[in-house]
Amino acid sequence: MDYVLLIEKKGELAENLIELLEMAGIRAECVRSIKDVGPHLKNEGLFAVAANSLSLDGHIRTFARTLHASKKRKVALIVFGEEDHSGNEDVVDYYLQMPFDDDALLNLILNMRNARRSNVA
Image 1 (spheres, rainbow, N blue to C red):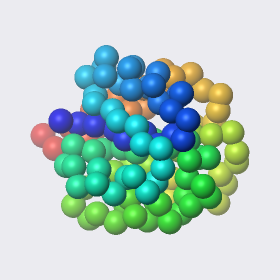
Image 2: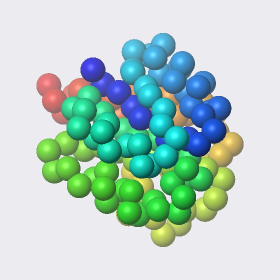
Image 3: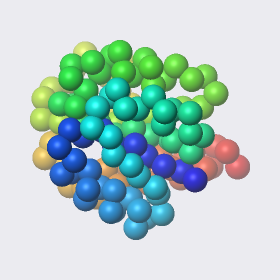
């Protein structure tokens, strides 16, 4: 089953997004730290990791390299936050400046899932 992993320390934004994603038929889980992501990378259904930039603790480049290390499949990195992330465009697949509408992230993830399914078929 396709699913998305959310990384957010406080989990407040993640609760709303998980509900929206699950209504759209996409399983979503939330972890509080990049240290908790490892076991999820083995799941073939994982196609995106969405992270609050504050939850990445300034390790965007390192985390992105880990995430993109698998040559078998593409796991996209979506970063959302209030800070400017210029200089990381080469490692971040999508960046959403906060504040943003939850629907913007939902639509982005739905489009990614649909594109993934088209490539598999």
